[in-house]
Length: 208
Image 1 (tube, rainbow, N blue to C red):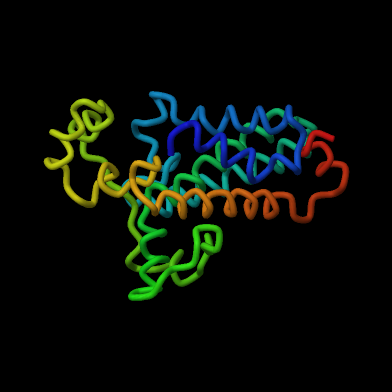
Image 2 (image 1 turned 180 degrees about the vertical axis):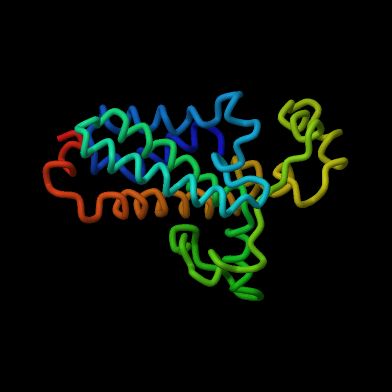
């Protein structure tokens, strides 16, 4: 997703739970994953190229760093690790076909509104049909040059990030489902990461 939507997701999902300073640092770490260097050779940052095992390992690594940092009373590192992790889980819904699979369950019927999407439906999370967009350099990079996009897109395979992404509203109605799923998933990961933490460390994390 584009930066503005990652920011919106962070504030929508966590704005009422943590301090402005903590949220600001988390959000900065989140969007920093989209820096130029983070776009190359880091499928685990964005759930790209069907690198599911690698990406889930990265998520767990960041969760572990959150807890380890809190035990060291290093709130800054905990916030940064959590921000990096949330970027990844948010991109899952924009860079995979999860939303399409969820909507396909309502074949021939009107699907529920975006706010009712289940972001962790077990049959879909573990579906053999789950895919994430592949990158096809150099054409994939040219896709991001807006004036070249109409000429480049027809040359890129349909299983590419360019065709599959739900990064902006321009991709159609499925973008709203990806946004709502990402908001819910960010909250789920926050609650999962905090579960079982003693009150002192929980207070440190939320910045109270």
